[in-house]
Length: 350
Ligand SMILES: [Zn+2]
Image 1 (cartoon, protein in one colour):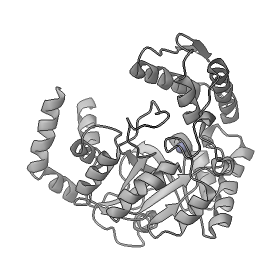
Image 2: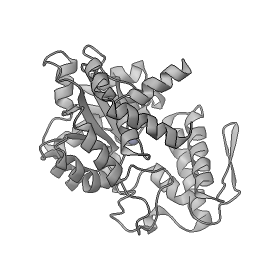
Image 3: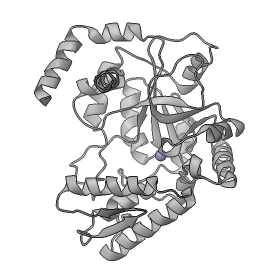
Image 4: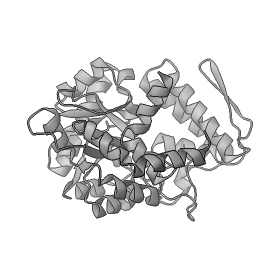
């Protein structure tokens, strides 16, 4: 369908009061939103990732509308409701950011604060210790450097060709490469080794790496330990764990699984002098075994990237979320985070 017609349809639905009816019908559902960062493209920064982020304006405008339909609550409040300990506030919504990147605090937090919206940041403690960007940002930077066009990389049974002829095509190459690596049947430590080898090869070929970009780069820098400790004292900010090394739990050895869950929790607690009771699965990957391990490690909740709402009585270790869109209009983003677009796409598939 033409995008103008789609927008017209959304506007018609919006002004007809449809969201009010939808919200009333689903008032007992608890929404959790996933974000990774908020950043404006096209600024005079040294680089931009191929994987986009919602802009300040999109985030701000969407939240300006969303506050009319949602009760934004902390994760602790939402967990209390899901357990049935406290009554459900109609249309409760929790905002979460995975990975603990610096732009979460520097760019997104002032906007959230303006709207009086609480937030959860999930950093990984290994990245906090090293103070270096995640592998996915290193890879994103490395693949954009000159001299890699046409390069073919074998990953398992698939071959990925780097196409640098346009930003869009390069983004396609990056996405295919990342997907092929994640689909390969291997342990997470082998996955991380292979990713490092590929990044190292790219960096050697171009002679450039993300470390050439100055520290404090808002696209890729993680928060520092000082930032995390400071955040933990702010009313409205919750810090949860996202493992030590961003390990995909179902692909981790038994020993690594325990270390990733327990060490990240205890190190965060030691630094913050506060309990760390919430967990976020790296890459959204979970299975029954890892969900049990998260519970055994003493966490109270864990969020996945499975799409949907949460209701009283749901398993607290497999909480579902909706992704906050990275582009488009604020109106479309509102339809997305209210679950309406997901419902419509389910109808069309079904
Ligand atoms: Zn992550």
